Length: 83
Image (tube, rainbow, N blue to C red; front, side):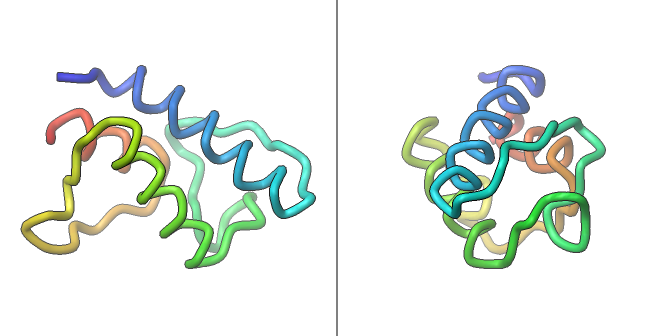
């Protein structure tokens, strides 16, 4: 099982990679950082890209049984840590 802090670090790294590919500067990501309608220049496609990347890296899919609501990086990290 991967802990939440490790997942948050991974989410931060992948978020920076996605932003760099868009030509955007990396921004700090904390557990309270919202993905949509927050400080990140993220849209729904970027969020989907992040989820696919996390599944590829971790081999986990916390959404296998259906979508689970999350808004922040910390909530997403907790879903992967529990998967």
